[in-house]
Length: 470
Image (cartoon, rainbow, N blue to C red; front, side, top):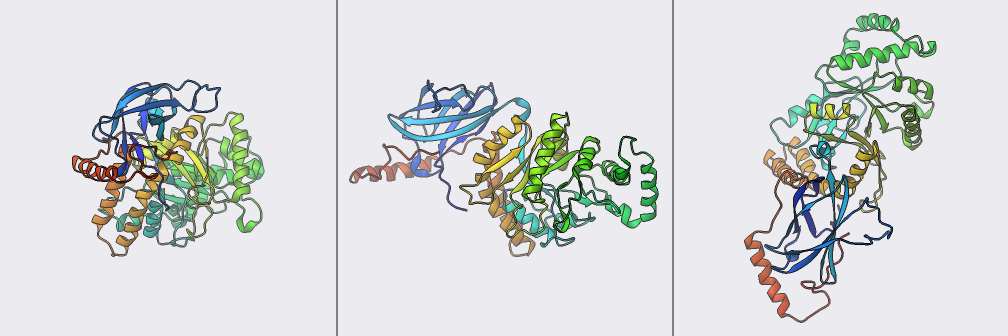
């Protein structure tokens, strides 16, 4: 990863809306500690405000903050659920521009989890070891994933065994990709601890008998040509629910061997309207044309009144030169990072599907899909939070894979994870600000005095303007 441009941070960065909160602006590098007892001007501008100037704001409300301990501290009530811009100035010099977000209580109580609920390992038709795959996901800033090998439930257990007793900060959700015999409909199952796939592999006669009974229950309005496929989808989704899992309608516009779609428009609409699925894999491994069609179908069905949670998935099979990993994923807004917490959030509609282009990290663009409220927050996080968080996760994923090969101790994994967790908790206000110690301030004051004794030069920014942090 390339170096970051930030030299200041706010603690926290996400605030409760309509409540007075304590705000701390702190340096991220020693040399940028605020000058003791100096006065700074702070302006806070709601980004989603009615501003006809189209630049900052026609009337920029400002107040003075005196620096102490290398920090700027003040109380503020952020209005509404939206992004806010904080501008810090000293005299006529602009020091930094920071962005924060305020949330209403229900969403403020959640933490965003970068997730992928559709992936494959070497145990089916993927190309990587299950435990190594988990490390690659963590390296890319993922908090959660489900290994959903084709008709195989057990490979996820390998991951649990390899990392047993190691705090990786990474949640492995149970999963499998269900495509029952004689059914072209692929269903991603997440959650629960009993395999559905094994039921039709270990006892095909029972499966055939049960499906025959399901065929008698197909609603009369379902066209006859779809009846047998509909019955098999009914069987699979009901078995998934009995096992305590969620059923995700996967890649409707996938073209096996680049021939025809595995599910046509009409049948996809019927399945989505049926109510048997808990979520729709809106973006995933089906090519950009398939993703475009998928989003168009979803938009039309929403206009007709369809309400269904959406997810984005990579359907990863290989990780090198992939156009899907790590560029198609889900943000889940869960109250707890557990399997049950993730499932409950998806069922409650607190998820967005995300796709990104594969250009360099500075130019990367994200497209998030879901409700306007969640997408607005997701876009803020994708711009301001996840690029920073991923830097911490990179070392976790690398040390996880080294640990799996017995080349690193678990303590290394856990030290890296602790660093990432402290960043995350501070960002969302669950942990206090990272403040310079008295020793750090003494160190900076010593070298700042040396700098001030030297010749004045254009690069000296102690009392001058820093480059605006944008």
